[in-house]
Length: 105
Image (cartoon, rainbow, N blue to C red; front, side, top):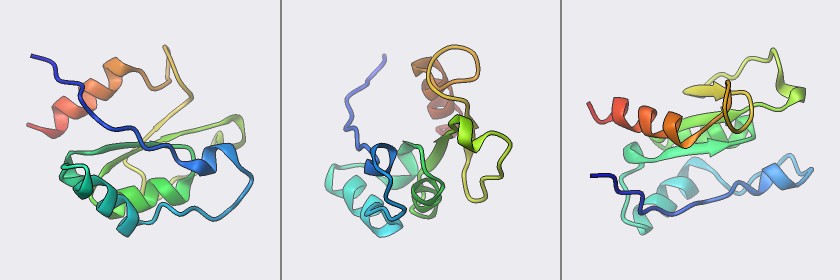
């Protein structure tokens, strides 16, 4: 039985040139709890090292979506790194479900 009822929070840093994000570990924790989720059951997908690290600090499983500018970089504090969206090495629903399934075991 597959339940995909969830909320989506988009990291505004993915769409701006600002180096500062409002998504801190505390903010991510508050967002998860206010929506009825335990942060340890949240898979956070982001495009910035700072927000992915904050999500990990909040107890979430963080997935960093690399861009061409990030290729070959190191991502301390991030749980998983993918090369974009879609098939191949990108993030897909199948990959998210596999991550989710492995975390609940």
